[in-house]
Figure 1 (cartoon, rainbow, N blue to C red):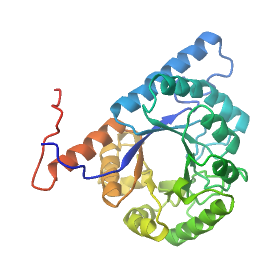
Figure 2: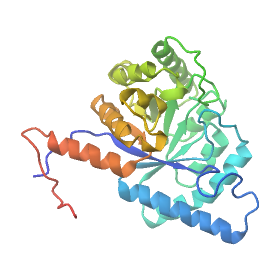
Figure 3: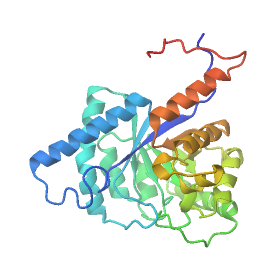
Length: 302
């Protein structure tokens, strides 16, 4: 019993430190000490929950980059993150190695703030284009991993404009350009993780995202770097099913995409539904193990 792992794909769980995460628009603008304590406790439960459910990495971001979202200042981003980084530091001090923590930001100053509190990964949706100091900072921290993501907009913000053609060709050219720039600034190849972007970050046409999924092996072989895929709840998943029930109800399509990404060799999948993804990948590996289905070595508690 037990069997070998079918996939080595790590699960990155999403944790949004944005205004609608807990108390609606305008949160924390005029909060008292008690309310700040409550928010920290909420995030502690959220983060611990993601880790317990099986997240290898927890990705925290304080600025939404979804279509229609508005940019915020670096100061506002850091203000929001200030309520979370202390929680992460406490968790790491109490349980070293409990998980890795990633900061989802396009700003070097915010990345540095997070790294000072124990974060070991920077997830940059602008691929180093938003902040000219980002590559220099990553190079100064050789133990830090850097997710270099493609987005059709240099700001790293998704949109619903149908203005993209030859998407995969552009993604490859972008990686060639930005990898070269990163290396010129002293970033090492061992620090780099490539994210080709999905959904409205690259195109409004589902076929473009599906092409990217199919070409994960090509990206891996061309650049010799690990690939991260963030397909969870994306709008293009609607094209895979006969009826869609909204972003929060795309668990099934998201799980199928996570499995497909893992089968294509993705090193990481960024997901909202950590527990379901973990169970699905493990159960699939067990059911389709060489020699037939195997049971997990640890008895399942019903």
